[in-house]
Length: 623
Image (tube, rainbow, N blue to C red; front, side):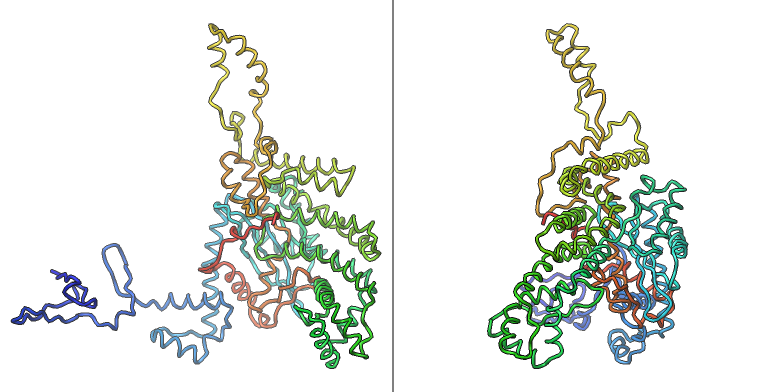
């Protein structure tokens, strides 16, 4: 029997029961106590193996090996880390029984972890009740004839959380054609069993992608697997389109920026000029950035950043002209004004591209506002008082309309599914963009919205007797008729039934209810996924439709994150602004393609313990 000791009679360290041995009682009734447990075990943790038994920790070498492989994958450590001398010393200090494996064994362990995680993801996707949007991007090798194709799935899970998973990272010969890509993508869809769950596909505007999408759309439509006969299937990468548009605009105004570029070049190539420029900055007391970046080809954001920084240092450049006789490139006041106008124009595209390429992967309802705002701006540029904007507007508007007409519909439907805007925002912008022709474009969106709803209703097999989401009010026409025979209000009852018989006989559909309800007040923090989750019981068909449409992304930048895994693949930090292509890092070229795929995909699949849900990062276009 254990002996309990009150705190009044003993020190804290003796507050135990079974660990104390009553060994001797003195004549003064003093108790000598000997602890059976050493303090050395205080740093160890006991593990409860079941509800009634506590066991000491048991080292599992196999589990530790797999944990080591996961560490290599998740933190992008090199395989030769397993052979680092002092890492081995460190591991031995923690657990002498843990033996590091060779690089070959470690690669095998990585492939084993990859297969385990792939099986988990396969089962998860197989049980999904929603559709999936795929993003496809290609990373080419540097001076070699191969590339990697990244396939990323975007979907909203059963808890209404926006999710992203890289399904594949496949080696492919380069250059490749559209048919090769088509065969690769169809094989991957069948491998993952998602061909019947596809909603849309997002790609850039490469010719091979156009061919691939056309073949894929035909293949899926032949099996009746796409909504609206595939009208919502092909979505072009918005960030890539905007980059192409801006590049075209900048080409026609090269001469307007010469003085700015020459000034930056002077500072970069002349240490004396740079020293004088710092003196000028101090004299005019300019705060902020003190170094002007030089713009580079294919990255139009570098031109915007160059102008932004140079304009903030305008006073310093003007001062430099006075204190440095060698500096002869200072723009005139008119040229500075032109630079300010161009910078303001580019800022619209810069902010939109940053929105598209943000790491939060916003739901598709946020893109419509930016796209329409750009269209409105381009129309205003056509009649601008500034020559530079008029020159830019022509080629930019032409390319915008060329690429945007095909994928604007799905983004319009997405904003209709936003209870703060519905069809009203579409009508508002289309009037500004299309003028007297707005009605035709608005009707196209409305028809597509209703047609899509009807197809979802058919898929869910809603019976004709269903109330279609309308909550019954508990009344019945038979109650009125039965009570009317001997009631003095029988005349009123007859009048009431005749007046409302048409309305009560033909109950409104979900889509009619939704569109007729007043707009939801705009709040700073509005979570559209939570709203649809809460209202899915009342609007079940529209909620199913919203779940698929809102998962459509307007950019492949999310998949480009795969090209920037600790620097092992490609630097995609400015991928949204770069039309020059992405390049595979040399450190991956020495690995087998299946190992590269295992590293990239499993890195994405393994959840970090402190990783936040994408749902908490859902963007709000009213910010």
